[in-house]
Image (cartoon, rainbow, N blue to C red; front, side):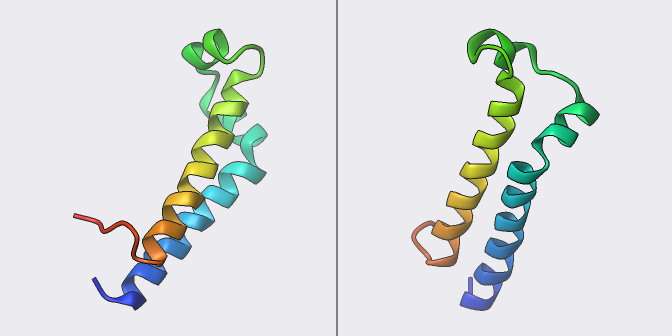
Length: 72
């Protein structure tokens, strides 16, 4: 996979992660609460879960852009 493709996919994935971090309230209001997150992560656990997924998406994007991980 060439650098340009990795860069485009990585920037897209990072964009998704940034949106998840910035708009977690609106996202949770649209999709609803997650029972598992509320039970295991405490009150507001769904918001925390969305933010954790956003951070992981950004981390994955950085690793992909620098070629540390390789997709299929």
